[in-house]
Amino acid sequence: MIPAYIISLPSETRRRQHVQAECAKYGIPAEMVDAVDMRHIEEAKLRELCSLPLHKKPKKQRYLTKGELGCALSHHQIYQTMLARQQEFALILEDDATFIQDPTPVVQAAFLQRIKQQCDFDVLLLGYVKTVARYLPYYYRRIPIKKRVTMSTPQQDFVFGTPWEQFGCGAVAYVITQKGAEKLLDITKKPCVPADDWLYFEQQCGLKVLHCRPTLVLEDLENLDSTIRTECPDFWKPKLSSLIIRSVKGWLKNFAMNVLGFK
Image 1: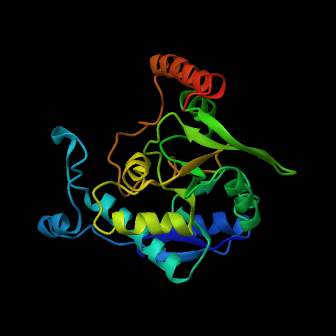
Image 2 (image 1 turned 60 degrees about the vertical axis):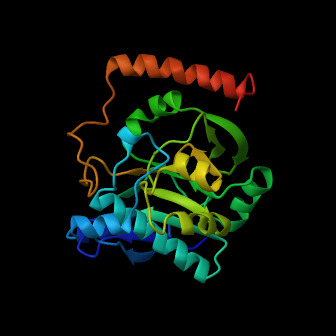
């Protein structure tokens, strides 16, 4: 099994217990890494540690929030550790991660090498945020992937691929390669985007991002409050109009990618 790291604030005892119990279910010997805590930092210092996303339109440019900056720097320090230890792969988990399927087949170095032989990647996303298990069928319809690799295990068939366009789907659980850590190390030193802005990383440093279907991990939305987001309760519940419209758009994208060969 590849090395695993958990990002968690030292004060978040409940979250630590939660994610350690999740890892114990599948025998994942994860190392706990203290998250960078920016909750009490002054605004002036905050702006020294991050930068404006100048690639965005002026109206959309903003500095990261304290939570976003702390999260980005926490992931950055794991990239440093991974490279210092010369690790080929690493599994990175946030402390609200909940396994909804057995991840152990996918987090084996030999399995990951087989994926890379068919489709090279720097980051393999194993989990998503802002959704719950009962809405995953809709999630998959809404955001289909172009099938790049199909692999089977005795327990599960897996498809690995890329969406029509990368999107901020969270950094709750992902595998990163040594090359991926190298690409992200410099660009996250003084971050201008959240840790999960995969489109930005793809465009700015050529990061190759694959998605795993079915997903293996979700954030525990219903039991653990986010330390970053401020949305209203039940923000993740789709409206009926969205269910229909986005499902149709997703079907068209799926047809274009997997039948017509676009993207």
